Image (cartoon, rainbow, N blue to C red; front, side, top):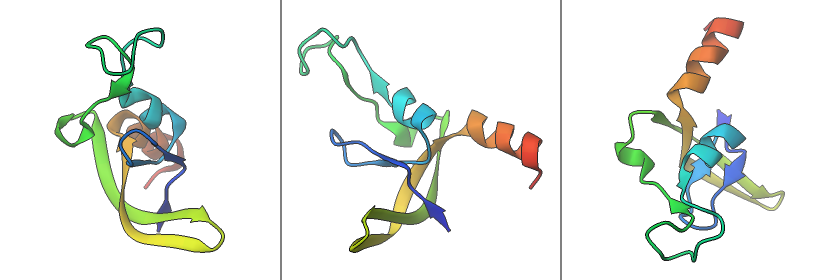
Length: 86
């Protein structure tokens, strides 16, 4: 069972690693959040660079969220398969 590693407070999505979390954010850090160039979340559901897998989230030791969608990068998955096999 996959477990999420990163959470986005902006959109509530779960991510398998830092690279996928960073890739879902776009825009400039110095701009206002709601401007066209400000830092914001990208819709990963329509982005072919991302893949979603069912997993669980352990926000803290007292709470586990079952059956959440955990987003990761297709490129990360390919690299892992090459390094570790299936």
